[in-house]
Length: 219
Image 1 (tube, one colour):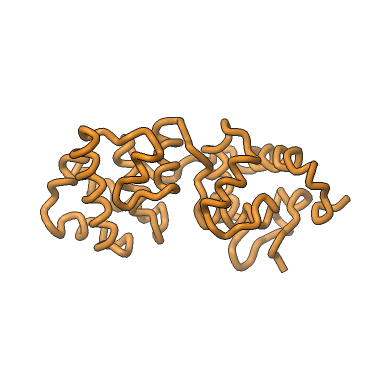
Image 2: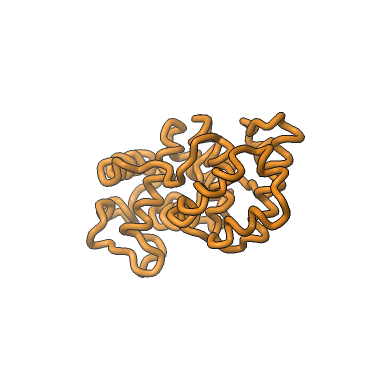
């Protein structure tokens, strides 16, 4: 039976085989953002919206050298943050989010990044994706799989989700993938999406998942 005709009851077994293959293909999969604290990871993730991780990693050393913690960022002079993060794009909006999140962390959480989805999600500029990045990578306690554009695209092509909405994709992945692999799988899928399964021209002929993937939505 071909992957396109696979029995739905075999989905968990096929998912396990896909995960094992991904692990062999991308053993180095990890968080691509550089950080030294949960707060730095939260800020870096906010800055990564519509921006490459490589660019963010070039910007954050100078940002954190001048503003090393939430208290420092919360009291940053007007325009100072925006100047340092300009090259990440949408710097005015990101500056407001970073400053707002820092002020909330200082004012509501005693300067410490909160450890629950509800509290993180209440911070300015922090949605479920950013919250899951922090919870999973900084605290080892993910509330779900991180779903960015790469993860969402691959989830649909692999037949793991039919949805475009990231939160619905996350729910599908959370049901299918073992909890102890939630953090890792997002990094592996992101790497695979960047290196092999591109948005416009997926290289199916070079893909280690070719025999397992139903290639949904691929011409």
